[in-house]
Image (cartoon, rainbow, N blue to C red; front, side, top):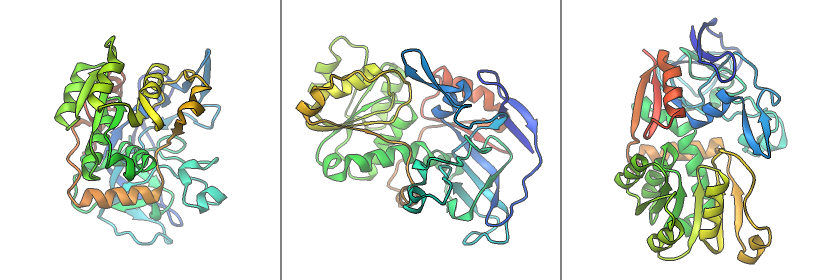
Length: 352
């Protein structure tokens, strides 16, 4: 099978031929139909995360081995299954939950595999969907999408799940009563706006430095879209929000965005950080208790949350996502475009 892999960090993806896996036990094999290209793939391509003060979190040191077929947002048709696979049917289309843990630790047994200390993540620690076939360790990680569009559904495995889980951490009692503040109007920002609509939220004010992305946010229903580089950005945010924000989601995760988000929060407000741009935390320690701010990191979501999200999508309440499609063999071009900020919405690879 054709796979599009990182062979060396920061070099172009290479097309490799690999054997088609044969599922054993409860394993299942998908013939890939759609694979989302996520900003996390850029960090994988770079080989690490910026921890600030010149420190880098090396992914190779954390178990990422090359060559690696990227892709943790994958929809495929069930091609084959091991003798112990249950609850699935050949020929049907499934979304694969990628944030798979060891399955044995207390964290996994509690249904929080995305927090497992020994993960088996698809597209990160195992080959992912930038390939003609994807081997999934257990049929329980497949979610039947029926006749829904694979290109639309693939991004829910990460961008959709990540924002859905962040909104749950903020809580319906907050987002249905108050607008929230969102930093970043890329794929996750637009997904946040759509999920807020579907969940009956009061909407969001979006901050981004890119005018094209701000316009996309307004088209997606943002209450306002503010230039993050404006000298009076904090004043503009307060005016658009009608005062301090009760909650903010930082989809960038840079010192500048997290500091601005913190400063715009009301006393007792909540800041959820998702983005992995990197750097050092910018807040005054004393102001965290003085303002009674909650600062939460949010890493994707668990299997139950993805199942809940797809049930919501099936109701038709979630508006379609802006999607730009590429052929599977254009994986390197799609990743490069995303790296340069040239994709509005989500990029998705489509297999023939």
